[in-house]
Image (cartoon, rainbow, N blue to C red; front, side, top):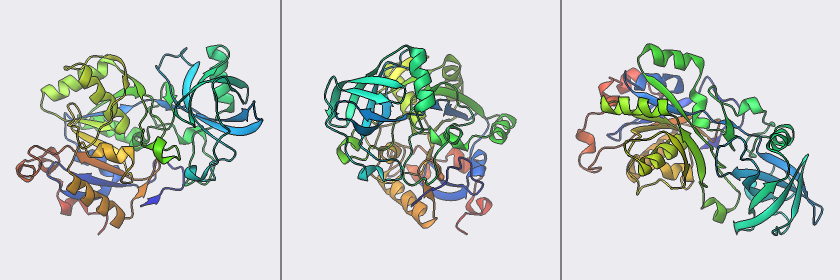
Length: 374
C-alpha cells in the first residue's frame, strides 16, 4: 500500500474496507460507514487532542543537536507534566525517514537537554539507548507553555509538507494528551455525528494518550505500543452497558479505544469508570470482551496496529483483507483509508460462515454497496 502523502484528515475519496464476522470482505466509500451500523449500535471514539510532541534542541554535554519525541507519561493529570518518556534522535528532521535518522549522542543519567525554552534532565535510559525517562524543570504552566510554543507535531517522511496542529486534531479533540493523533477519529465530522443521532446510533468518548507509531529502530518498535494512560468516563460506561444489555454492538473507533476498553475489562466486569494505564498487547491470542467491531486505519503487516487486528479475525481472513487493500489501492498511515472489522464468531473455523451478523442483517449486499473496485 502507498502512504497518504498529504495531511487531509477527511479526504472526499477516502475508502473503507469492511470485513464482517463471517469473513466476507467488501469495498465501500468511507462516507458510507454509517450504512454498516444499525440502531442501537454504539461508537466509542478517543477524544484526546494531539500534543506538539516533537521537541528539537541541544544535548548540552556534547553540544550536539537532538530531537526528543515525547512518547509516554504516567497519568493524564494536567499538572503531572514533569516526567515523560521520550525517543531521542540526532541531527535531522522529518524529511529523513525515521529508520534512517542519525543516532543521538550517548545519553547518560544526569545529562541536560535544552529543548527550546525548556530544560530537562535525563533520569535514566529505559532498556534502549534512545528511549529515556526525562524530567522537565519548571512549573506545570511553564512546561505546558514551552511545549505549546516550541513543539511540533510528530511527523514522518511520507508527509511532505510540515504538519500544523489543526492537521492532527479530530473534530472531538479535548484534553491534549496524545503524542500522535488518534487518527481513526478522522472519520468523524459534524455530518456523521448528525446522521448517527438521526439513525439512533450511539456515540461516546474516552480519553487515551495515543503513543508513537514508529521509533525507527526495529528492536524498539517491537516494544510498541508503550504503556498509555486513559480515562473512561461514567457516561461512556453507562452507554456501553446499555448497548450490550440490549444486544447491540460496541464499535471502537481506533486501536487506542480498543486497547483502553479491553484493558479496563481485565480490571473489572462490568466496566467501571475511572483512570487506568493500558499496558497489554492485543493480538491473535486475545479475545475482545467489550469491543465487537473496530474502525481503524490501514496498517502494514508486522506493525503493532496490524497485530491488534488479529484479535478480531483469523489470520486467513486478515490476509484476504490485506490483499484486498493492496489490490484496491488503499492508502495507509494516519491520513489514509480505513477498515471496519467485525469480531468473528467462535468457533472461528466452522461456525463463522453460518452465523448471521449485524452487517449481514443490515442488508448491505455487494450489489447495493457498488464496490469501490468496480
